[in-house]
Image (cartoon, rainbow, N blue to C red; front, side, top):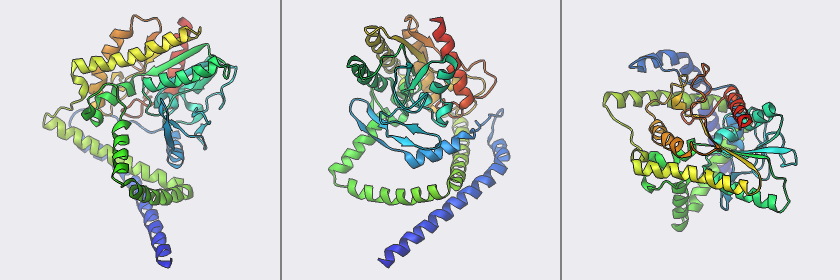
Length: 390
């Protein structure tokens, strides 16, 4: 028993020391970032997106409360949680105007992590700002990593409750999609699965089930549980140090990405993705548009308005300079034109892919297209302006 106790204390001390080194390492890297960036640039300077102040509190809360469980038909949904920056109810809905569906909720908005509010607080999300600018009850029905098919299935669940008079129907439903429906089927992480109807978690789930079949899941769970215990204890004790570690990891990642970028450029290497195939890209774009069309039909039968928005691409803006050789860029360029061509004739479609084009301010802080609080407010205003024109 004493040996276990001594070992636990040693592990905790080691973890503290590692995080302290991360904090001071981040400080040292921050001091030398400018010089390192200049030495890594082979052409004109490229700005690295600056993380906003809300991001570190958000990251801390997510790490301490991250929990997803399998949900029939929709794959997964956030568990109920209450933290400084993230509050979610039992339905998996993040706070917008409230944590409950009520008779005053007129707008339901679905989407992936950009709608859900990755990197920002509850009152800095697109749904929250949309409620402010429209003066209407707005419900945040987004979820991290969700694709449009998951939103469609969740909409079906909620419409069943509407039909049963459990909840009041909204006046308008919005699907805000594009990034996940492009990235999941197109990028290299899912290329071996060779299907446009795919979610990147499929490979992880298959691997998990294979471990279970081989009797290895229990051992893996014990190792992960031990790691999580020390991680949780330390993060609760010192979120500031955890923030320092995250900055350190981010700085290292940025430098490695720059080095890879230059190496690829010098060797004339190209990044491939599934969607360079026109036939495959056509299936991917059709899947997204068909999901939107299905939602429109379901809502029209109930007298509910519907709007599908193709979200902005980070690679169509003047201000975002990161991830130029990222495979996501090729995926966006393969899929977005096809989606616009297929959907532009529908009255429910809004092409928001270039909404950030004319902005002189940098709203995007990563290669996926996640927005800082100012960016979310800007998009909410754009959504409301377009809804009023319908």
